Length: 240
Length: 329
Image (cartoon, rainbow over all chains, first blue to last red; front, side, top):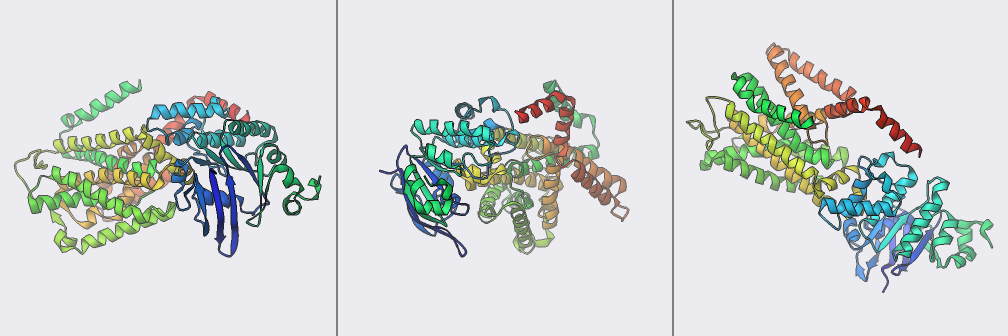
């Protein structure tokens, strides 16, 4: 059975169709990349899946259970974590406290949450920054912090909205390695990413969106040869 | 060092009524405790959970009216009325929460003002609870703890108010260190991010509101027993809601002792300017009081607690250097 099954999702904002009849599935442990030009509806798709925006039509299923009308916290409880394109750390809290919020999903005990948060920070390589306030972290560190926070909820599926966006180039390989490691440990991921090198390198399957519609759902190699994807997004330079 | 200082303060506060036997100094201290408790209660919802309410007079008034009505109609001790008032305030706060928690930021604050005005207007027009004329608390003699009335001396009121403050601070301290305290702060910082991590935002806000409302109602009952007369103008006004907020903001929101510090500064200021300059018919005391609040808002928006932090940071330049190093790394 698929872990995530999206079928016929449609979302309109006034006259603008942000998602039109979007359907795809994610199997347990799979890594799916999502590409598309700005305004293609990638982030909206994440919002619909995670309950942050109500869909106008279509359904979202997790493990075969319809979650279309559930709240974000309920969906998180079902094992779906996410990050945001525009980073949303809890600025006035330390890195450790940020991650503890995620850990509190699994425990009410403050010490246990602190311990779990420490482990999650170690996992993303932020162990030495536990006591720093979130506002004092660099963009790359904040990306890692959001990852650690989501990981602390112990998800089976993680939706990452732009792993490398806005990050200083030197920090990109580390983040990519981190995503691969999480995948290697069996976590299913859906990753929105503009850096084509990254997406082609890590994805098992790529979903291409344009103007809210899925124009391709295929392996990275096939995506690179897909005429519609080239026209809509990649440009002629990518033709192999 | 901190522990010793704390012990000295506690002893001084406990011994205060033994040294100062005249009513006025005791009255000022009682008001500090009461407003400290109210601001601490407000701080649970506004400071920790980030929901700025300007309608907390509703819960204060419910506390005052519930105990007074129960004493008048059923001759029940105000202590029972106090508990009942807190319970009723929780129920009302949950009902208010459903519509107002849908709103954010300024709109939430404005909605709470609206609710406060509605409640005050209802009470003014409700004859059974005395309408605009208000209610006298039935006078009971002799002075006794059960009657919650002390006509001979303010000393007992002093200790009850102190107990109220201690309860509010203890509850906040406990909350601050619990899972719930962390979740409240996460909601204050970014409620979407909190929701994405599994935090049931609406439920936590309702919980913060309940604790805050209950503690505020306790203060209302105390006030009714202290002045023995209540009317909508004295226990339900917007000015009270704003004052509660002001005390907390002055002291420093989102910190345990901020609201208490705020009360310790603002109440003597208010009482002092009133005694020194009031009664001239020119309201000069209120002008000065208002000007002081403006000065604080302009120069120290983080409150007294923020000032103390800045002072401590200033003495430790190494901390700043370390931070710069970190951000460079």
